[in-house]
Amino acid sequence: MSNNSYNEYIYQIVGESIKLNPKKIFEPEEVYLIVDKDLKLIWIWSGKHSRLFHRYMAANWAGKLKSKKKFYNFKYELVKEGREPEDFLVIYDEIKNQRADLQYPGQSRNHRKIHKTHVKPGLTKNSSRIQFTQPVDQLSKLDQSRIKSLLAEIKEIQMHMKYSFEHLERRIAEIEKILD
Image 1 (cartoon, rainbow, N blue to C red):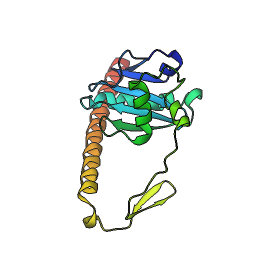
Image 2 (image 1 turned 45 degrees about the vertical axis):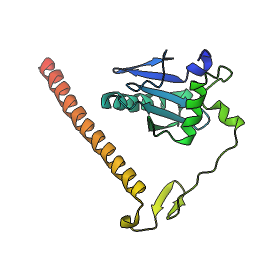
Image 3 (image 1 turned 90 degrees about the vertical axis):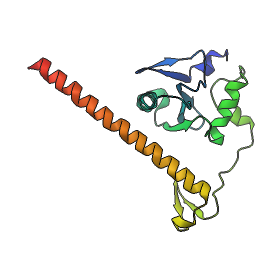
Image 4 (image 1 turned 120 degrees about the vertical axis):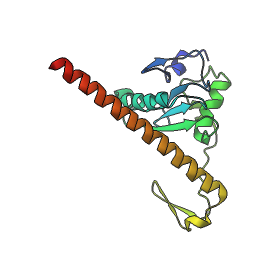
């Protein structure tokens, strides 16, 4: 994609830092931050083979970006390769089709018909919360599979947090040793 304005909204996680305007995007081993101005959202796209550490760093950088004036009050959402929501697929298509006519990710959404979110039968939507109206044992196999997948992801994040806290403790001990 050759449009510099568009690329100012795309970052790649490189170790503990970020790189603006990466040469390649949507590589399975990588993690990217893509700012969606229209939705006021920072998408964290993680490839199938990306490292947990890079996903963690991406969330950290998304938090830093959204504290800047340009992206103030933006939310962020993790997107895994192969599980991209419809709102993100707009951006995915823009990048894959090298839409040089666009100024920022998601801009082509303005030219499309906006799709309403549909809630599955058995669920009700109250403001931003979705509540189950059926017993868990009556969930479809697909829903049960999705729940198991989410639990596995949460456990993976929990393990990374544990590692991070241990790492912080080692750093604090190192600093205290230097100060003594």
